[in-house]
Amino acid sequence: MKKKTTFGLLGLAAAGAGAAGGWTALGNYIYNRVMLPQTRDPAEEDVNPAQITGQDCEASTTTAQVVHDINPVQIAGRDWARKREGFKEATIQAADGLILWAALVPGREDCHRWAVCMHGYHDTYESMGAIAKHYSESGWNVLMPDQRGHGQSEGDYVGWGYDERLDIVGWVNWIIRKDPEAEILLHGVSMGAASVLMATGGALPTQVKAAVSDCSYTTIEAEMRYLLGHLKDELPTPFPLPAGLLFAALRKTALHRACFDLRDAAPLDAVAHSSTPTLFVHGVEDDFVPSTMMGKLYQAARCPKSFLWMPGAGHAASVGTDEDLYWTAVSTFLQDYFPEEA
Image 1 (cartoon, rainbow, N blue to C red):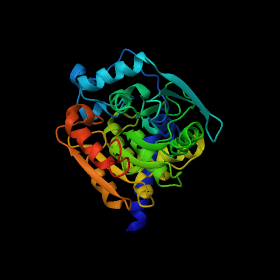
Image 2 (cartoon, one colour; image 1 turned 135 degrees about the vertical axis):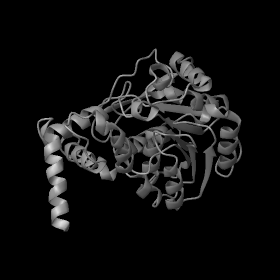
Image 3 (cartoon, rainbow, N blue to C red; image 1 turned 60 degrees about the horizontal axis):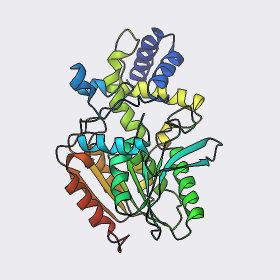
């Protein structure tokens, strides 16, 4: 019985992939759809395309752009970041040779607090404007990297936090060289949060005091299965294929083209090895990264931890949904690790 089921699934995969020129072609199609960096339109704000086009929200999130709620706070933050008033620029060379870029906002002259703000999928440092602005106004030094393959940083694929975790370590070391007395906070949103969590799962300098993970996924496999489950009707196959088979095609292609296993992009595994105090935040109404993933991450974490469920917030929109609640939770959590200024 088991053999019949296995052969049946393989036959289904082969038949479906045949319409796209074979299993390899299907893998390449999905890879090009979800793993190639895309240039963000500078004129685009944090708006929900579904409200413009009338399309189903879940369906629209599976295409090139991530859906954000219309959010005046975050739009204003993006505008602040885009103007770069008083900003400087920084670059490092990644472990694999790529040149990575970041916007630097110097803090008070006597301040050794640093906030490293990591943006999400198919965006740039600008999307962290609302969060970065808060730390800057509190006197902190703020570093807003463009993740590899995004904005002004080099790279030809999205690593979903796997390669990016090492990039964060590179930025941390850059800060420490610049300011040996640095006390560093890692604050990421969406894929940026996943990158942060994966960084905390490895060895970090003692200058990294805490982390904030805002709407991270558990593993990219779980996230891709969720997204591909909505995308499958759009694929060039004669009939829909199970999300598990679509992920298998993508994984095989990523191994060949990006030279890493997508199953290694697993914040859920990383937090089980982390000793970095972490605040987990997630919007209750998030339908791009299911809010249930935050509970799984929190349960798996073995570090000092706290959490915030943000009522009414969609994906990556918590900071603008209720600023007071968001920053009260963040400052309350950080007071044990940055006691003088939290």
